[in-house]
Amino acid sequence: AQSVTQPDIHITVSEGASLELRCNYSYGATPYLFWYVQSPGQGLQLLLKYFSGDTLVQGIKGFEAEFKRSQSSFNLRKPSVHWSDAAEYFCAVGHGNQFYFGTGTSLTVIP
Amino acid sequence: DAGITQSPRYKITETGRQVTLMCHQTWSHSYMFWYRQDLGHGLRLIYYSAAADITDKGEVPDGYVVSRSKTENFPLTLESATRSQTSVYFCASSPGGEQYFGPGTRLTVT
Image (cartoon, rainbow over all chains, first blue to last red; front, top):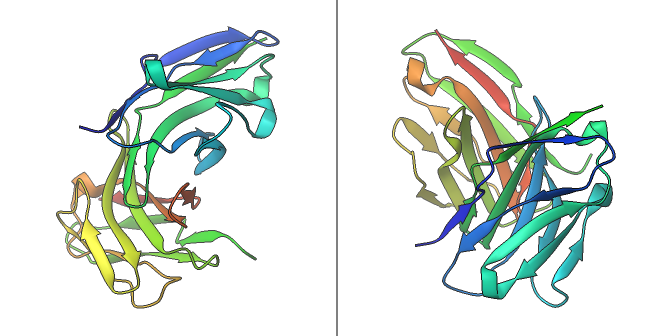
């Protein structure tokens, strides 16, 4: 069955520190992979996407993600976190009407 | 302006009333979706549409009705609102890959 797992419900990092949010997926076909960010009271905003090609993809706001087929993972990274990055982050896989979201990772940034 | 909009942004209604949440996108995306977001449940798909006049149920369709007579609009109707339908509702559209989300409608059923 298709699914997305975000093993970390909540992560706290210091401002300026590096960040890695984990995402593992189960999907029968070649996956289309996505990361979204949701600030409080807002809708989900697309950070980056992977369809094919280079397994390291760059997104908005300085984020990047790496697709590792052997590990069924698509982890999100940022080298230096800013206080404004505090939000909920969702990993997703699929295309068309077959779209699956993880349960989200809440990021707290401390000064 | 181009994008995806939802209206109203906030709505309070009483149990048993009919409520319609509107969703409009300007990209002519084929796919449109309705989700609800509740604490502890993440995003749950209510209904989706692959094209005008084509709709199908998602994970939690009971108590909801959708229609899609035009590509750009995808209204969601709660036929007889219940307190369990208090939630934040998000509409999304997609060309087939990534989804683009509206700002959401916060619905409270009293």
